[in-house]
Image 1: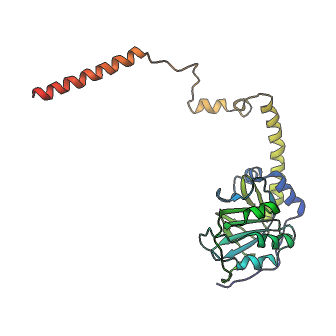
Image 2: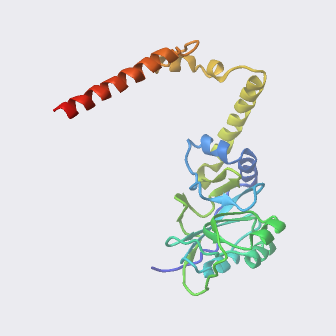
Image 3: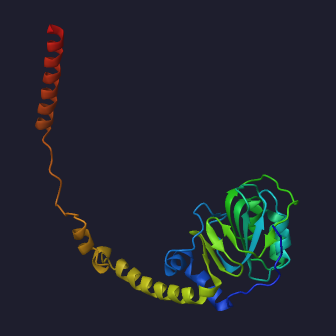
Amino acid sequence: MRHKVVRSIRRPDADTIRLLGDLGVATVHEAQGRTGLLRPYMRPIYPTAKVSGPAITVLCHPGDNLMIHAAIEVCKPGDVLVVAPLSDSTDGMFGELLGVSCRAHGVIGLIIDAGVRDTTDLTAMQFPVWAKAVSAQGTVKASAGSVNVPIVCAGALVDPGDVIVGDADGVVVVPRQTAAEIAKLGDQRRTKEQKSRERLGKGELGVDFYGLRAKLKELGVEYVDELPEVAADDDASDDDAADDDASDKGRSVAGG
């Protein structure tokens, strides 16, 4: 395999990136046909973490952060590092010192399908990170990898320049080529959801304005006023009958 660091990538326009970030992960995911989500184990290191920016992709060996250092050199302000090891890893491949370096070069966040450490310091810096694990396990700087090549991170294909959106709900990737259209669709969805929010807030039932009563009927769901009660005497009679049967069987076995 030939390893490479690609210096230049194409990025979506800033307004598109900003709108996708404002919309948030759930709305963007819905707007692009419920695609693009990274695996749900990718969690932010602090609950208010948010990010939206073009992806700088990093393909590296597990337990080795050499290529993360190499990637920072080609980042531009507003970029998001997206790191995928070649095989499963939970080692703490990114910590406070790398966070300081990223911040100095304008990197606004990290998505890593591996471990992160120094989370207290990174939280104090308000440097947003989504990771597979938190682990103090140290790493080396020894193996070649690549920067700005297509990768699969936490189950999702990420190309350099794709828009990464992260918040408390997780992480979603939006292909660069469709980012503007997805942002438009997401904005329309947000407007529609606001109308639904107002109706729900006034007490209207979702089964009515979503038209779900017909679906319930089609599925055979019945509405009843209450469940019939089983009389306690009937329960006792059934228990007595069962005891009598058991006694009769016992006598039959003994007499046989």
